[in-house]
Length: 334
Image (cartoon, rainbow, N blue to C red; front, side):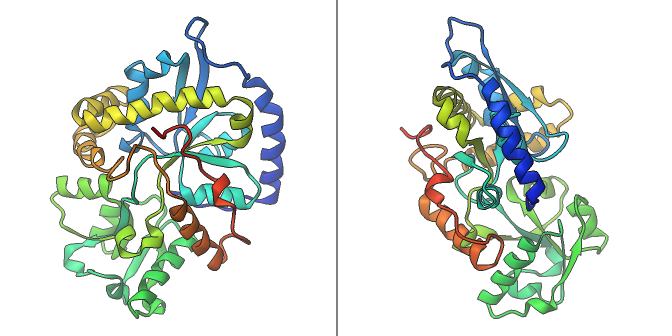
C-alpha cells in the first residue's frame, strides 16, 4: 500500500505521454481468428493472492479465449497508476484512494472492478500490547509508511471513541517487516492486510490483536485493491476492455470456486513465493473476493462517495471528484 501526490511536472508528463502512446494501442476488437493482441497488466506490488485471478485467467486460457496475450509485469519505476495513465500498460492494480488522488489531479484513471468486496486491512499488534480498540492507541508507537493519510485515519478513529491522538507516536518504518519491528519493540502497532500478514502471523505462532478498519468505521470500508485502466482506452478501445475484463472476471470466479487449484497456479507462476502462505491466504480470500455482492467486481457509488468526501474534508484533495466517472461496473455486471 503506497500513497502519493503527483507533482505538477509528473501530471503534465503523464498527460503528454498518454496522448502520444495510446495511438499505438489500436482500436480493433480482439479476434480469435487473428494473432493474439498483446496486452500489458501491471501489478501494484510483488505478486500475491490479490492478483490470483489474473494469473488464473492466464493459466486457464481465459485471456487467450478472448484473443489476448497478457503480460503481467511489476513496476520497475513509478507506480502502477502512472504506468496505466501513460498507456505503457493498458490495465493494472491500484486502490480506490490512489484513483481518487489521480483524478483529483486531472489524471483520468478508471476503476473497472473491486478485486475484494471489502477492505481487509486494519491495525494489528502483538497480543501482549493489549491494543483492543483505537482508544488503546494512546501512549503507543505506530509504525507506517510516513503518509499523512495514515495519521488522519488513526486520528479519525481515535476521535470517534474520545481518545487523544496527540498521545500517539508516529514512526516511519517504510517497508520494514511488521513482525520484526513489533517483536523488537520498535513499534507497538501497524497497518496490515488480514489475508496476508494476519495469516503469516498464525503460521509464525504469533498471536495478534486486530482492529478491522472497515468494521471500525464504515467510511474506511473502501475498495482496495481495484483493477484500473484509463479513460482514453475506454473511449478508443472498449472492445479490448470488454475482452480483458471478461477473462479477468472468469479468473477471479475460478479462484473463488477453486482456491486450492488457484493457489497452485500462483505458486507455479511465482516459484519464489511462500507456498504455504499462499494456500492459506487463498482460502481466506476465496470468501472475500465477492463476499455478499451479487457478482465479483461490483462497486457501490456510496463507497466511492463516502471516502471521497472524507479525503476532501481532510484536505487530501482540493475538491471532490465526480465519482460516477471514477469507476464503472459495465464490464463485470451480469
